[in-house]
Amino acid sequence: MRLLLVFLSHLGKLLKPPKGARTELRRQEAAWKRGSEKAAKTEAAARESAKQILAGRVEGIRDPGKPGMISGDQRYLHDHMRSAEGQHNRWTEGNWRLLIEEFGQEVAVAFRDGTSRILATE
Image 1 (cartoon, rainbow, N blue to C red):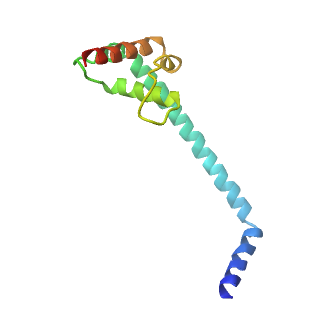
Image 2: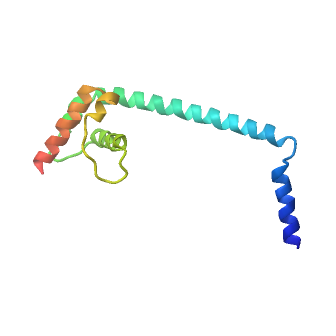
Image 3: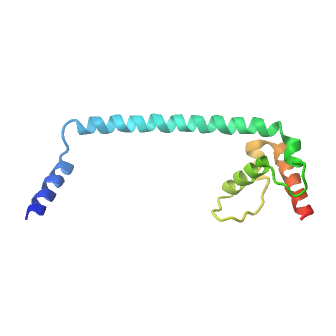
């Protein structure tokens, strides 16, 4: 019986929240929205920075220096390509052209050449 009374009390609070509850909820939603917008801006800035960095490292993407070695830049581009394909397993179709839109033709072709070179040495 006591459990039923506790349940009904909580149910009553949920059905008829206190007066300030909506204001608090709106304030919380506004804070979440600001945080989400800030995170989106930070992510966009990081992507833009990555584009500029990779554009300056084209030759290193094409040839990391050691046969069979995968550079961090190649790994980054590979991971980006996998996520762009929308697959959630460890295999990829290897569609390097997906990189053109985000990183440009020069970086995408360098990635293709670099990965082809790695495969040719194995």
